[in-house]
Length: 425
Ligand SMILES: Cc1ncc(COP(=O)(O)O)c(C=O)c1O
Image (cartoon, rainbow, N blue to C red; front, top):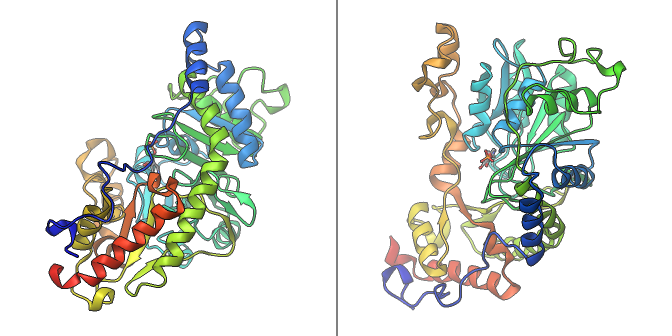
């Protein structure tokens, strides 16, 4: 049968049989939104925000949670809470959304980009160890798409070198490493709630920590420097490891609104069931991919005990698929046409990324040395580059909310492309 990209009938007629929609909402969400609207408490530590944060901390398994405007400023606040800034280096993977590195720039630190593990696309612990210098202050592992970074190795390196660990969990609301949730394994966890994420309020961000001093600083930093109301007994004032000057710290307004919190209460109630559905679908796809030469699921580390997918991702080997000769971008186009949902490569590596251009902003020209240090082209990232150019396939997580039969269709589409590969070479 002719490929859809060449005018044939697609495996799925997505116009008439659309994929599950994202985001989802219920009548209870509408009710909560109206409640906020009518209450007049639209922001600033409202009851919905307080309720949600307590539930989120409990869900992640940390003592504290803080809400902020998005998952970019959360990471900036995490760095600031740890007093990381000029003269400091922060190690992070070269394969991530630009925000991970942009926040290090914005606090005047140097983002040090290192390569990833080709099996998981997450930061390579050996590359982290090799990049440590006397200026290194923190490691920012990113749990990318469906996989978590090797948190055993990262934690061991951090302990050995006395470094902080900020987990970028923008993709992992609910994943677990040895039974502990992403966001509870490092010094601070950071989550995005942007529309594409599996826990979303349209925009928004969350921070988690079990360190009381850090929580006080994080809360103050998102709220113009005000100390958390009623949460700072005399003994904590200025006495902690990251002590503020008296009880004050310089900052701005990075708060979330009460409307977002209202949406999040329902979204969190639905999250475990959705995670289960996505994990089941992901497993069906992973098992099926294993049977097709030239495509390969992302490595499932046994220590990762729960899988919360952001986009579903897998590996493509252009030399092996259907005997070779079909480049990844052609495979993406053909699969998109068969299934009526976009398939594309992963993020652009940050050493040459169209949305990560540190040398275009005068604000970062603190000194000639700093300017040279933040030039991303100085980092060599062969695995990130190969993954981006040749090997990655990703698609929206809403596909994983489909049923078992729909997952079979995805595998069917890949098989069809394999059979008709001659027409693509
Ligand atoms: C890995 C990663 N980190 C951080 C962010 C930033 O989150 P936000 O868009 O909420 O600012 C994103 C968003 O896509 C992301 O994918």
